[in-house]
Length: 126
Image 1: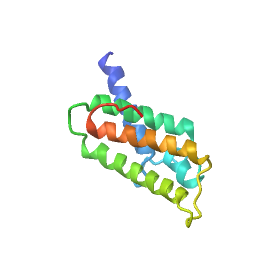
Image 2: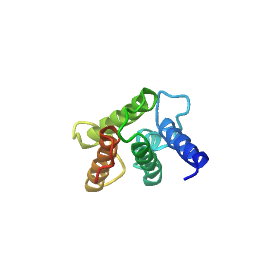
Image 3: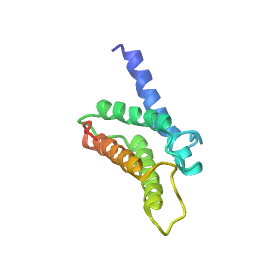
Image 4: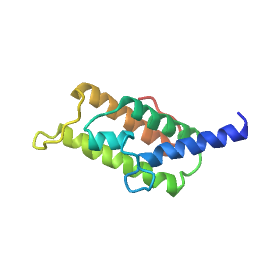
């Protein structure tokens, strides 16, 4: 792959992460986390963009430490999403994600696997 394309892919992957980072200036309300929080919806298209970005970053950083400027937003996105998923499954909480629980469970497993793969340094099967 030509270096320019690779650099553009890296930039696109980081942009996709930052669009989901609530504390960042580049946060987009139509991002995966924006939709999950604001609309109670697991937007499959928005999630797919984030998943692809995280998978690219996993390959990019394989065998190396993930820089803090990438790691912190990823951890915050994961933490926020897991909090919302836990609220969905908590009978005492009123927050509900617009998805059936079996599908949501499978999506949560995939998301967890992708995040763990990034920090483990290799893609993991969901």
